[in-house]
Length: 131
Length: 395
Image (cartoon, each protein chain N blue to C red):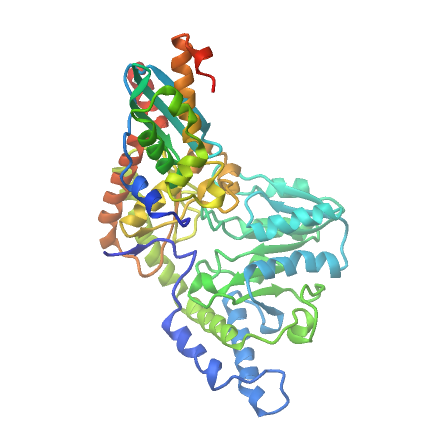
Protein backbone atom coordinates (compact mmCIF):
# COMPACT_ATOMS: atom_id res chain seq x y z
CA UNK A 1 0.00 0.00 0.00
CA UNK A 2 1.43 3.40 -0.88
CA UNK A 3 2.14 5.98 1.80
CA UNK A 4 -0.91 8.18 1.67
CA UNK A 5 -1.37 11.36 3.68
CA UNK A 6 -3.96 11.57 6.45
CA UNK A 7 -6.13 13.75 4.21
CA UNK A 8 -6.05 11.18 1.40
CA UNK A 9 -6.99 8.44 3.83
CA UNK A 10 -9.82 10.59 5.20
CA UNK A 11 -11.28 11.23 1.73
CA UNK A 12 -10.76 7.60 0.72
CA UNK A 13 -12.46 6.35 3.88
CA UNK A 14 -15.29 8.89 3.82
CA UNK A 15 -15.65 10.02 0.24
CA UNK A 16 -17.91 13.06 -0.13
CA UNK A 17 -20.58 13.65 -2.80
CA UNK A 18 -20.64 10.18 -4.35
CA UNK A 19 -23.20 9.54 -7.04
CA UNK A 20 -24.58 10.69 -10.35
CA UNK A 21 -26.92 13.64 -10.80
CA UNK A 22 -30.00 12.39 -12.60
CA UNK A 23 -30.62 15.24 -15.00
CA UNK A 24 -27.16 16.70 -14.98
CA UNK A 25 -26.39 20.02 -16.66
CA UNK A 26 -22.94 18.76 -17.56
CA UNK A 27 -21.10 15.43 -17.64
CA UNK A 28 -17.35 14.80 -17.85
CA UNK A 29 -15.53 11.47 -18.07
CA UNK A 30 -11.81 10.68 -18.01
CA UNK A 31 -9.63 7.57 -17.86
CA UNK A 32 -10.23 3.92 -18.72
CA UNK A 33 -9.84 0.51 -17.08
CA UNK A 34 -6.53 -0.16 -18.86
CA UNK A 35 -4.75 2.58 -16.93
CA UNK A 36 -6.70 1.64 -13.84
CA UNK A 37 -8.66 4.83 -13.12
CA UNK A 38 -11.98 6.16 -14.44
CA UNK A 39 -13.94 9.16 -13.22
CA UNK A 40 -17.35 10.45 -14.21
CA UNK A 41 -18.36 13.87 -12.91
CA UNK A 42 -21.88 15.31 -13.17
CA UNK A 43 -22.77 18.89 -12.26
CA UNK A 44 -25.87 20.97 -11.63
CA UNK A 45 -25.45 24.65 -12.53
CA UNK A 46 -27.50 27.56 -11.23
CA UNK A 47 -26.79 31.25 -11.92
CA UNK A 48 -23.39 30.38 -13.33
CA UNK A 49 -22.43 28.56 -10.14
CA UNK A 50 -21.87 24.86 -9.47
CA UNK A 51 -24.85 24.16 -7.28
CA UNK A 52 -24.19 20.45 -6.99
CA UNK A 53 -21.46 18.07 -8.09
CA UNK A 54 -21.28 14.30 -7.89
CA UNK A 55 -18.91 11.67 -9.22
CA UNK A 56 -18.49 7.97 -9.82
CA UNK A 57 -14.94 6.64 -9.65
CA UNK A 58 -13.30 3.33 -10.53
CA UNK A 59 -9.79 3.43 -9.22
CA UNK A 60 -7.23 3.25 -6.48
CA UNK A 61 -7.20 5.03 -3.14
CA UNK A 62 -5.68 8.15 -4.67
CA UNK A 63 -8.26 8.31 -7.47
CA UNK A 64 -11.13 8.11 -4.99
CA UNK A 65 -9.63 10.72 -2.66
CA UNK A 66 -8.92 13.05 -5.62
CA UNK A 67 -12.53 12.77 -6.85
CA UNK A 68 -13.87 13.52 -3.40
CA UNK A 69 -11.56 16.51 -2.93
CA UNK A 70 -12.41 17.96 -6.35
CA UNK A 71 -16.12 17.74 -5.58
CA UNK A 72 -15.60 19.67 -2.35
CA UNK A 73 -13.43 22.28 -4.01
CA UNK A 74 -15.86 22.83 -6.88
CA UNK A 75 -19.11 23.10 -4.95
CA UNK A 76 -20.47 26.65 -4.86
CA UNK A 77 -17.80 28.05 -7.17
CA UNK A 78 -18.61 30.01 -10.34
CA UNK A 79 -17.86 28.09 -13.52
CA UNK A 80 -14.89 30.36 -14.20
CA UNK A 81 -13.48 29.75 -10.73
CA UNK A 82 -14.00 26.01 -11.03
CA UNK A 83 -12.17 25.97 -14.35
CA UNK A 84 -9.15 27.43 -12.56
CA UNK A 85 -8.85 24.40 -10.26
CA UNK A 86 -5.78 22.42 -11.30
CA UNK A 87 -4.79 18.81 -10.64
CA UNK A 88 -1.76 20.20 -8.81
CA UNK A 89 -3.95 22.21 -6.43
CA UNK A 90 -6.04 19.12 -5.75
CA UNK A 91 -2.93 17.15 -4.83
CA UNK A 92 -1.77 20.01 -2.58
CA UNK A 93 -5.13 20.18 -0.84
CA UNK A 94 -4.81 16.46 -0.17
CA UNK A 95 -1.47 16.97 1.53
CA UNK A 96 0.40 15.56 -1.45
CA UNK A 97 0.19 12.32 -3.40
CA UNK A 98 2.85 9.61 -3.84
CA UNK A 99 5.01 10.45 -6.86
CA UNK A 100 3.83 7.58 -9.01
CA UNK A 101 0.18 8.52 -8.43
CA UNK A 102 0.53 12.12 -9.64
CA UNK A 103 -0.15 11.37 -13.29
CA UNK A 104 -2.48 8.41 -13.48
CA UNK A 105 -4.79 9.02 -10.56
CA UNK A 106 -4.81 12.77 -10.39
CA UNK A 107 -7.41 13.35 -13.09
CA UNK A 108 -10.21 14.83 -11.01
CA UNK A 109 -9.82 18.43 -12.17
CA UNK A 110 -9.77 17.25 -15.79
CA UNK A 111 -13.05 15.38 -15.31
CA UNK A 112 -14.62 18.43 -13.64
CA UNK A 113 -13.47 20.73 -16.46
CA UNK A 114 -14.96 18.35 -19.00
CA UNK A 115 -18.28 18.48 -17.18
CA UNK A 116 -18.18 22.29 -17.16
CA UNK A 117 -17.25 22.42 -20.85
CA UNK A 118 -20.08 20.02 -21.60
CA UNK A 119 -22.46 22.40 -19.81
CA UNK A 120 -21.08 25.39 -21.69
CA UNK A 121 -21.38 23.69 -25.05
CA UNK A 122 -24.99 22.78 -24.35
CA UNK A 123 -25.74 26.33 -23.32
CA UNK A 124 -23.70 28.07 -25.98
CA UNK A 125 -21.52 29.89 -23.51
CA UNK A 126 -18.24 28.20 -24.39
CA UNK A 127 -16.63 31.27 -26.01
CA UNK A 128 -17.19 33.37 -22.90
CA UNK A 129 -15.61 30.83 -20.68
CA UNK A 130 -12.18 30.29 -22.12
CA UNK A 131 -9.64 31.27 -19.54
CA UNK B 1 -8.52 -5.33 15.89
CA UNK B 2 -8.13 -8.89 14.75
CA UNK B 3 -5.85 -9.28 11.75
CA UNK B 4 -6.10 -12.04 9.17
CA UNK B 5 -3.09 -12.43 6.94
CA UNK B 6 -4.00 -13.90 3.56
CA UNK B 7 -0.79 -12.77 1.86
CA UNK B 8 1.69 -15.36 3.06
CA UNK B 9 3.53 -15.68 -0.24
CA UNK B 10 4.65 -12.06 0.18
CA UNK B 11 6.16 -12.98 3.53
CA UNK B 12 5.72 -15.71 6.13
CA UNK B 13 6.97 -15.94 9.67
CA UNK B 14 9.86 -18.32 10.22
CA UNK B 15 8.95 -21.72 11.53
CA UNK B 16 10.03 -21.64 15.19
CA UNK B 17 12.04 -24.85 14.73
CA UNK B 18 13.88 -23.19 11.83
CA UNK B 19 14.71 -20.16 13.95
CA UNK B 20 16.02 -22.38 16.75
CA UNK B 21 18.25 -24.24 14.38
CA UNK B 22 19.61 -21.01 12.91
CA UNK B 23 20.19 -19.09 16.15
CA UNK B 24 23.56 -20.58 17.24
CA UNK B 25 25.07 -19.77 13.85
CA UNK B 26 24.71 -16.03 14.47
CA UNK B 27 26.69 -16.05 17.68
CA UNK B 28 28.25 -19.31 18.82
CA UNK B 29 29.10 -20.99 15.51
CA UNK B 30 29.90 -17.81 13.64
CA UNK B 31 33.01 -19.19 11.96
CA UNK B 32 33.76 -18.96 8.26
CA UNK B 33 33.30 -22.35 6.56
CA UNK B 34 36.40 -21.66 4.49
CA UNK B 35 38.63 -21.28 7.56
CA UNK B 36 41.35 -23.84 8.09
CA UNK B 37 41.03 -23.72 11.86
CA UNK B 38 38.43 -25.27 14.10
CA UNK B 39 35.99 -22.34 14.04
CA UNK B 40 35.09 -23.22 10.48
CA UNK B 41 34.33 -26.82 11.24
CA UNK B 42 30.78 -26.71 12.63
CA UNK B 43 29.54 -24.17 10.04
CA UNK B 44 31.09 -26.29 7.29
CA UNK B 45 29.36 -29.42 8.52
CA UNK B 46 26.08 -27.52 8.94
CA UNK B 47 26.20 -26.52 5.27
CA UNK B 48 26.80 -30.12 4.22
CA UNK B 49 23.78 -31.19 6.24
CA UNK B 50 21.56 -28.38 4.92
CA UNK B 51 22.54 -29.14 1.34
CA UNK B 52 21.52 -32.73 1.87
CA UNK B 53 18.12 -31.72 3.19
CA UNK B 54 17.51 -29.34 0.30
CA UNK B 55 18.43 -32.13 -2.11
CA UNK B 56 16.10 -34.58 -0.41
CA UNK B 57 13.14 -32.20 -0.82
CA UNK B 58 13.47 -32.44 -4.60
CA UNK B 59 15.01 -35.88 -4.97
CA UNK B 60 18.46 -34.54 -5.79
CA UNK B 61 21.92 -35.28 -4.47
CA UNK B 62 23.50 -32.70 -2.20
CA UNK B 63 26.44 -32.10 -4.55
CA UNK B 64 24.09 -30.89 -7.28
CA UNK B 65 22.63 -28.08 -5.14
CA UNK B 66 24.07 -24.57 -5.55
CA UNK B 67 23.20 -22.26 -2.68
CA UNK B 68 22.17 -18.69 -3.52
CA UNK B 69 20.50 -15.76 -1.80
CA UNK B 70 17.23 -15.54 -3.74
CA UNK B 71 15.13 -17.30 -6.33
CA UNK B 72 15.85 -14.38 -8.63
CA UNK B 73 19.56 -15.08 -8.31
CA UNK B 74 19.04 -18.79 -8.97
CA UNK B 75 17.00 -18.00 -12.07
CA UNK B 76 19.70 -15.67 -13.35
CA UNK B 77 22.42 -18.23 -12.69
CA UNK B 78 20.43 -20.90 -14.52
CA UNK B 79 19.75 -19.01 -17.74
CA UNK B 80 22.51 -16.42 -18.05
CA UNK B 81 24.95 -18.82 -16.45
CA UNK B 82 24.19 -21.55 -18.96
CA UNK B 83 24.29 -19.28 -21.99
CA UNK B 84 27.57 -17.74 -20.85
CA UNK B 85 29.29 -20.90 -19.78
CA UNK B 86 27.77 -24.00 -21.29
CA UNK B 87 28.17 -25.71 -24.57
CA UNK B 88 25.14 -24.04 -26.01
CA UNK B 89 23.39 -25.24 -29.12
CA UNK B 90 22.46 -21.82 -30.40
CA UNK B 91 20.91 -18.47 -29.69
CA UNK B 92 17.34 -19.50 -29.01
CA UNK B 93 15.59 -19.53 -25.61
CA UNK B 94 12.06 -20.73 -24.87
CA UNK B 95 10.04 -19.66 -21.87
CA UNK B 96 6.43 -18.82 -21.09
CA UNK B 97 4.41 -15.61 -20.98
CA UNK B 98 3.61 -15.97 -17.28
CA UNK B 99 7.07 -16.35 -15.79
CA UNK B 100 8.36 -14.28 -12.89
CA UNK B 101 10.16 -11.02 -13.71
CA UNK B 102 13.48 -12.62 -12.72
CA UNK B 103 13.04 -14.75 -15.84
CA UNK B 104 11.30 -12.28 -18.16
CA UNK B 105 13.58 -9.34 -17.47
CA UNK B 106 16.79 -11.29 -18.05
CA UNK B 107 15.29 -12.60 -21.29
CA UNK B 108 14.76 -8.98 -22.37
CA UNK B 109 18.43 -8.29 -21.68
CA UNK B 110 19.49 -11.43 -23.53
CA UNK B 111 17.31 -10.40 -26.46
CA UNK B 112 19.21 -7.12 -26.66
CA UNK B 113 22.42 -9.16 -26.75
CA UNK B 114 21.20 -11.00 -29.82
CA UNK B 115 19.40 -14.03 -28.39
CA UNK B 116 16.06 -15.01 -29.86
CA UNK B 117 13.32 -15.57 -27.30
CA UNK B 118 10.07 -17.46 -27.74
CA UNK B 119 7.51 -16.91 -24.99
CA UNK B 120 4.93 -19.67 -25.12
CA UNK B 121 1.32 -18.59 -24.67
CA UNK B 122 -0.92 -20.09 -22.00
CA UNK B 123 -4.60 -21.03 -22.12
CA UNK B 124 -7.27 -19.27 -20.08
CA UNK B 125 -6.25 -21.29 -17.01
CA UNK B 126 -2.58 -20.46 -17.41
CA UNK B 127 -1.46 -23.84 -18.75
CA UNK B 128 1.36 -24.23 -21.27
CA UNK B 129 0.56 -26.78 -23.98
CA UNK B 130 3.44 -29.29 -24.40
CA UNK B 131 2.61 -29.37 -28.13
CA UNK B 132 3.32 -25.65 -28.34
CA UNK B 133 6.67 -26.32 -26.72
CA UNK B 134 7.44 -29.10 -29.20
CA UNK B 135 6.70 -26.80 -32.13
CA UNK B 136 8.78 -23.96 -30.70
CA UNK B 137 11.98 -26.00 -30.34
CA UNK B 138 14.51 -25.68 -33.13
CA UNK B 139 18.16 -26.59 -33.65
CA UNK B 140 19.25 -23.35 -32.05
CA UNK B 141 17.30 -23.84 -28.83
CA UNK B 142 19.73 -23.88 -25.90
CA UNK B 143 17.44 -23.69 -22.91
CA UNK B 144 13.78 -23.96 -21.97
CA UNK B 145 12.61 -22.34 -18.74
CA UNK B 146 9.05 -22.94 -17.59
CA UNK B 147 7.81 -22.47 -14.05
CA UNK B 148 6.47 -25.39 -12.02
CA UNK B 149 3.53 -23.35 -10.76
CA UNK B 150 2.46 -19.75 -11.05
CA UNK B 151 2.78 -17.66 -7.89
CA UNK B 152 -0.12 -15.40 -8.84
CA UNK B 153 -2.87 -17.60 -10.27
CA UNK B 154 -1.55 -20.83 -8.74
CA UNK B 155 -1.76 -22.89 -11.93
CA UNK B 156 0.45 -25.98 -11.86
CA UNK B 157 2.15 -26.82 -15.17
CA UNK B 158 2.41 -30.36 -16.61
CA UNK B 159 6.08 -30.34 -15.71
CA UNK B 160 6.80 -33.97 -16.52
CA UNK B 161 5.32 -33.68 -20.01
CA UNK B 162 7.10 -30.41 -20.71
CA UNK B 163 10.45 -31.77 -19.50
CA UNK B 164 9.94 -34.91 -21.61
CA UNK B 165 9.48 -32.78 -24.73
CA UNK B 166 12.69 -30.94 -23.92
CA UNK B 167 14.54 -34.20 -23.36
CA UNK B 168 13.41 -35.65 -26.72
CA UNK B 169 15.16 -32.74 -28.40
CA UNK B 170 18.06 -32.78 -25.94
CA UNK B 171 17.42 -29.23 -24.79
CA UNK B 172 18.21 -28.26 -21.21
CA UNK B 173 15.08 -27.70 -19.18
CA UNK B 174 15.02 -25.31 -16.20
CA UNK B 175 12.04 -24.83 -13.95
CA UNK B 176 11.40 -21.99 -11.54
CA UNK B 177 9.76 -23.96 -8.75
CA UNK B 178 9.74 -21.08 -6.26
CA UNK B 179 5.98 -21.14 -5.79
CA UNK B 180 5.71 -24.94 -5.85
CA UNK B 181 8.62 -26.12 -3.70
CA UNK B 182 7.54 -27.08 -0.23
CA UNK B 183 3.90 -27.36 -1.32
CA UNK B 184 3.88 -29.91 -4.12
CA UNK B 185 5.94 -33.09 -4.33
CA UNK B 186 8.86 -32.42 -6.66
CA UNK B 187 11.40 -34.93 -7.87
CA UNK B 188 14.02 -33.80 -10.34
CA UNK B 189 14.57 -37.31 -11.65
CA UNK B 190 10.94 -38.28 -11.96
CA UNK B 191 10.05 -35.02 -13.70
CA UNK B 192 13.29 -35.01 -15.67
CA UNK B 193 14.15 -31.37 -15.16
CA UNK B 194 17.79 -30.33 -15.57
CA UNK B 195 17.76 -27.27 -13.31
CA UNK B 196 15.37 -26.23 -10.58
CA UNK B 197 15.05 -23.01 -8.55
CA UNK B 198 13.59 -22.90 -5.06
CA UNK B 199 13.52 -20.38 -2.20
CA UNK B 200 13.20 -20.95 1.53
CA UNK B 201 10.99 -17.97 2.33
CA UNK B 202 8.15 -19.63 0.45
CA UNK B 203 7.97 -22.50 2.93
CA UNK B 204 8.68 -20.90 6.31
CA UNK B 205 12.43 -20.66 5.89
CA UNK B 206 14.37 -17.40 6.05
CA UNK B 207 14.35 -14.67 3.43
CA UNK B 208 17.60 -14.59 1.47
CA UNK B 209 17.89 -18.36 1.28
CA UNK B 210 17.53 -20.14 -2.04
CA UNK B 211 19.11 -22.75 -4.25
CA UNK B 212 19.55 -23.98 -7.77
CA UNK B 213 19.68 -27.67 -8.61
CA UNK B 214 21.98 -28.28 -11.56
CA UNK B 215 22.12 -31.72 -13.14
CA UNK B 216 25.63 -33.09 -13.34
CA UNK B 217 27.36 -32.41 -16.64
CA UNK B 218 25.73 -29.04 -17.17
CA UNK B 219 28.28 -26.24 -17.13
CA UNK B 220 27.40 -22.80 -15.89
CA UNK B 221 29.39 -19.58 -15.75
CA UNK B 222 29.23 -17.91 -12.32
CA UNK B 223 27.18 -14.74 -12.19
CA UNK B 224 28.94 -13.62 -9.02
CA UNK B 225 32.68 -14.07 -9.49
CA UNK B 226 35.25 -14.21 -6.74
CA UNK B 227 36.16 -16.98 -4.35
CA UNK B 228 35.64 -20.67 -4.82
CA UNK B 229 32.49 -21.02 -2.72
CA UNK B 230 29.81 -23.24 -4.29
CA UNK B 231 32.45 -24.86 -6.49
CA UNK B 232 33.26 -21.46 -7.93
CA UNK B 233 29.74 -21.01 -9.22
CA UNK B 234 28.71 -18.44 -6.66
CA UNK B 235 31.33 -16.42 -4.84
CA UNK B 236 30.91 -14.81 -1.45
CA UNK B 237 31.18 -15.94 2.15
CA UNK B 238 28.34 -18.33 2.90
CA UNK B 239 25.36 -16.96 4.82
CA UNK B 240 25.51 -19.92 7.19
CA UNK B 241 22.41 -19.10 9.32
CA UNK B 242 20.26 -18.69 6.19
CA UNK B 243 21.60 -21.90 4.67
CA UNK B 244 20.95 -23.79 7.90
CA UNK B 245 17.45 -22.31 7.98
CA UNK B 246 16.76 -23.34 4.39
CA UNK B 247 17.94 -26.87 5.17
CA UNK B 248 15.70 -27.16 8.21
CA UNK B 249 12.70 -25.65 6.38
CA UNK B 250 13.30 -28.14 3.56
CA UNK B 251 13.39 -31.03 6.03
CA UNK B 252 10.17 -29.91 7.72
CA UNK B 253 8.50 -29.34 4.34
CA UNK B 254 9.46 -32.81 3.15
CA UNK B 255 8.22 -34.48 6.30
CA UNK B 256 4.91 -32.63 6.51
CA UNK B 257 4.27 -31.66 2.88
CA UNK B 258 1.31 -33.89 2.13
CA UNK B 259 -0.46 -33.17 5.38
CA UNK B 260 0.26 -29.44 5.37
CA UNK B 261 -0.82 -28.95 1.77
CA UNK B 262 -4.00 -30.99 2.19
CA UNK B 263 -4.97 -29.07 5.32
CA UNK B 264 -4.46 -25.69 3.72
CA UNK B 265 -6.27 -26.72 0.54
CA UNK B 266 -9.35 -27.53 2.63
CA UNK B 267 -9.41 -24.01 4.09
CA UNK B 268 -8.69 -22.50 0.67
CA UNK B 269 -11.51 -24.49 -0.97
CA UNK B 270 -13.95 -23.48 1.73
CA UNK B 271 -12.93 -19.84 1.32
CA UNK B 272 -13.37 -20.08 -2.44
CA UNK B 273 -16.82 -21.70 -2.15
CA UNK B 274 -18.05 -19.18 0.38
CA UNK B 275 -16.77 -16.15 -1.52
CA UNK B 276 -18.05 -17.29 -4.91
CA UNK B 277 -21.45 -18.28 -3.59
CA UNK B 278 -22.07 -15.31 -1.31
CA UNK B 279 -20.47 -12.32 -3.00
CA UNK B 280 -21.96 -11.48 -6.40
CA UNK B 281 -19.88 -10.85 -9.54
CA UNK B 282 -16.69 -12.62 -8.58
CA UNK B 283 -14.50 -14.38 -11.11
CA UNK B 284 -12.08 -17.21 -10.28
CA UNK B 285 -8.68 -16.86 -11.95
CA UNK B 286 -6.43 -19.84 -12.64
CA UNK B 287 -7.22 -23.52 -12.87
CA UNK B 288 -10.07 -24.91 -10.75
CA UNK B 289 -8.09 -28.04 -9.80
CA UNK B 290 -4.52 -27.89 -11.05
CA UNK B 291 -3.44 -25.21 -8.63
CA UNK B 292 -1.20 -24.61 -5.64
CA UNK B 293 -2.94 -25.71 -2.43
CA UNK B 294 -2.63 -22.36 -0.70
CA UNK B 295 -3.46 -20.12 -3.66
CA UNK B 296 -6.74 -18.40 -4.49
CA UNK B 297 -7.07 -15.63 -7.07
CA UNK B 298 -10.36 -13.86 -7.58
CA UNK B 299 -11.37 -10.82 -9.59
CA UNK B 300 -13.99 -8.57 -8.10
CA UNK B 301 -15.91 -7.12 -11.02
CA UNK B 302 -16.40 -3.36 -11.45
CA UNK B 303 -13.86 -2.27 -8.84
CA UNK B 304 -10.13 -1.69 -8.64
CA UNK B 305 -7.72 -3.81 -6.59
CA UNK B 306 -5.83 -1.22 -4.59
CA UNK B 307 -9.05 0.31 -3.25
CA UNK B 308 -10.22 -3.20 -2.33
CA UNK B 309 -6.90 -3.99 -0.71
CA UNK B 310 -6.96 -0.77 1.34
CA UNK B 311 -10.55 -1.29 2.47
CA UNK B 312 -9.87 -4.91 3.43
CA UNK B 313 -6.74 -3.79 5.26
CA UNK B 314 -8.89 -1.39 7.29
CA UNK B 315 -10.92 -4.45 8.29
CA UNK B 316 -7.74 -6.28 9.31
CA UNK B 317 -7.59 -8.50 6.23
CA UNK B 318 -4.32 -8.56 4.28
CA UNK B 319 -4.35 -9.59 0.63
CA UNK B 320 -2.48 -8.65 -2.52
CA UNK B 321 -3.62 -7.56 -6.00
CA UNK B 322 -2.49 -7.66 -9.62
CA UNK B 323 -3.89 -4.22 -10.39
CA UNK B 324 -1.66 -1.58 -11.97
CA UNK B 325 -2.07 0.76 -8.99
CA UNK B 326 -0.63 -1.80 -6.60
CA UNK B 327 2.49 -2.35 -8.70
CA UNK B 328 5.39 0.06 -8.47
CA UNK B 329 5.68 0.02 -12.25
CA UNK B 330 1.95 0.89 -12.51
CA UNK B 331 1.38 -1.98 -14.90
CA UNK B 332 -1.33 -4.52 -14.31
CA UNK B 333 -0.32 -8.16 -14.05
CA UNK B 334 1.22 -9.72 -17.18
CA UNK B 335 -0.06 -13.08 -15.94
CA UNK B 336 -3.69 -11.97 -15.91
CA UNK B 337 -3.23 -10.41 -19.36
CA UNK B 338 -1.73 -13.68 -20.67
CA UNK B 339 -4.76 -15.71 -19.55
CA UNK B 340 -6.94 -13.26 -21.48
CA UNK B 341 -8.54 -11.39 -18.63
CA UNK B 342 -10.12 -8.05 -19.59
CA UNK B 343 -8.38 -4.96 -18.14
CA UNK B 344 -11.35 -4.37 -15.81
CA UNK B 345 -11.08 -7.86 -14.34
CA UNK B 346 -7.30 -7.65 -14.07
CA UNK B 347 -7.59 -4.38 -12.15
CA UNK B 348 -9.99 -5.98 -9.70
CA UNK B 349 -7.91 -9.07 -8.96
CA UNK B 350 -7.21 -10.20 -5.43
CA UNK B 351 -4.57 -12.75 -4.52
CA UNK B 352 -4.98 -14.84 -1.37
CA UNK B 353 -2.09 -17.05 -0.21
CA UNK B 354 -2.81 -19.01 2.92
CA UNK B 355 -0.72 -20.71 5.56
CA UNK B 356 -1.35 -23.08 8.44
CA UNK B 357 -2.26 -19.99 10.47
CA UNK B 358 -5.50 -19.61 8.53
CA UNK B 359 -8.54 -21.59 9.54
CA UNK B 360 -12.15 -21.98 8.49
CA UNK B 361 -13.42 -20.00 11.49
CA UNK B 362 -12.27 -16.77 9.84
CA UNK B 363 -14.08 -17.43 6.58
CA UNK B 364 -17.48 -15.93 7.52
CA UNK B 365 -15.76 -12.68 8.58
CA UNK B 366 -13.65 -12.55 5.41
CA UNK B 367 -16.70 -13.24 3.26
CA UNK B 368 -18.79 -10.62 5.01
CA UNK B 369 -16.06 -7.98 4.72
CA UNK B 370 -15.27 -8.68 1.09
CA UNK B 371 -18.98 -8.50 0.36
CA UNK B 372 -19.46 -5.15 2.09
CA UNK B 373 -16.26 -3.64 0.69
CA UNK B 374 -17.18 -4.73 -2.84
CA UNK B 375 -20.69 -3.30 -2.45
CA UNK B 376 -19.35 -0.01 -1.12
CA UNK B 377 -16.84 0.43 -3.94
CA UNK B 378 -19.32 -0.71 -6.59
CA UNK B 379 -21.73 1.91 -5.36
CA UNK B 380 -19.23 4.54 -6.53
CA UNK B 381 -18.05 2.70 -9.65
CA UNK B 382 -19.07 4.07 -13.06
CA UNK B 383 -18.63 0.55 -14.49
CA UNK B 384 -21.12 -0.91 -12.02
CA UNK B 385 -23.68 1.84 -12.67
CA UNK B 386 -23.30 1.22 -16.39
CA UNK B 387 -23.80 -2.50 -15.80
CA UNK B 388 -26.97 -1.84 -13.80
CA UNK B 389 -28.35 0.41 -16.56
CA UNK B 390 -27.65 -2.19 -19.23
CA UNK B 391 -29.22 -4.91 -17.10
CA UNK B 392 -32.31 -2.74 -16.73
CA UNK B 393 -32.57 -2.17 -20.49
CA UNK B 394 -32.15 -5.89 -21.18
CA UNK B 395 -34.85 -6.71 -18.64
